[in-house]
Length: 309
Ligand code: GLN
Image (cartoon, rainbow, N blue to C red; front, side, top):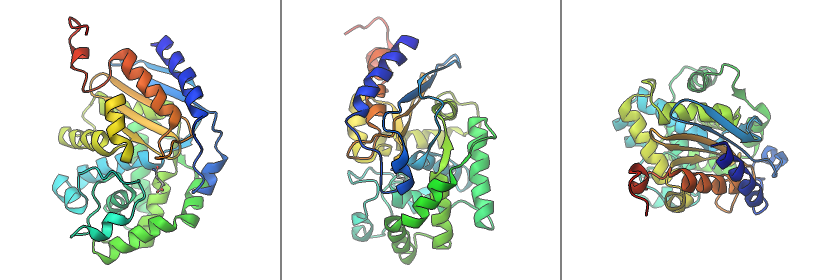
């Protein structure tokens, strides 16, 4: 395992040179594009880590998995999928085009920005502070780390410049998809995206998904992992399924969470992104891990050691 992670890091460092850090959220532009880290938890519960695995980064879209799980647990599958669809889009994560053309204006899935904002709208509570506290409480519980907090500079930076997300949210409010105050829900969304943690924390969250312990109920986990597999890397989800084959969720902060049920919980970090907004280093590292350890969910051979070809 150690050897495989070391090889992954060196492939990740090479791939990072091909990417660029996100700049549309100004605060993310200050990330060091050469940073590359990985942490993986085995079925035995051992955490292995290499590279900049203890460098914190903002979760960005990876937080959408957490709010989806919360909404599924609190409101149930029927209510969640009445708000958002469960189909991949093939469009960019922040695309606006289908919101108007779809007959019910329902975002196609919970992981594109529009869908994630609609899910955040479902977080219950009396005030912004109350709603954010619920999200943070759940994240800390999943990671088993009370120190996890929000990078306020990142949250403010996105709040000040998130014009496209505002456009998506106001359109959805007009269409009746959002029920609560638009600015409050947006502020909550920007803050959840700015939750900051290391690869090691994220891999620990991954253990709740890969090796369930009852905290996330079975149907909730099944739906979340299915959405990750079909939509977790936006318009790169098909390629990720072919090349890596794990349930994944990326974020423009440079993180990727990747799960093979029962076999692996992996978190990667590398803020240099490809053209679709997915971590260039993360994709290279996960491709290597999947090939070396047989982690693709679609690799029937990996489940039968007697078969070799
Ligand atoms: N906060 C980011 C946004 O809304 C999240 C996008 C992402 O990580 N892909 O633009």
